[in-house]
Image 1 (cartoon, rainbow, N blue to C red):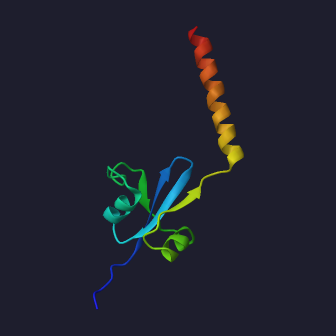
Image 2 (image 1 turned 120 degrees about the horizontal axis):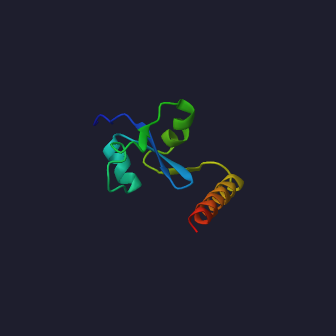
Image 3 (image 1 turned 180 degrees about the vertical axis):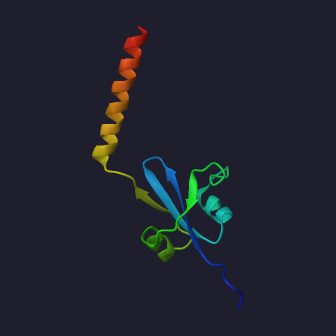
Length: 94
């Protein structure tokens, strides 16, 4: 029987979500995410060392898990703050 490679859990961000994958390597994680660039080299993907965060991904190896960051209300509030900052910038210019 072939020796299976140990799985590691990796995480990156995708919009308002964090995505997790249990994979044998960074290369395998990048392929599962459909990344065209090395997100690890860019500092936007990382190895997960917290057992609680890794638990769900390890239960579903090879499957990309999407976990929302924040609530809908927090996202809407952040969007409103960005709009207000943009309005202030436009007023200063004109």
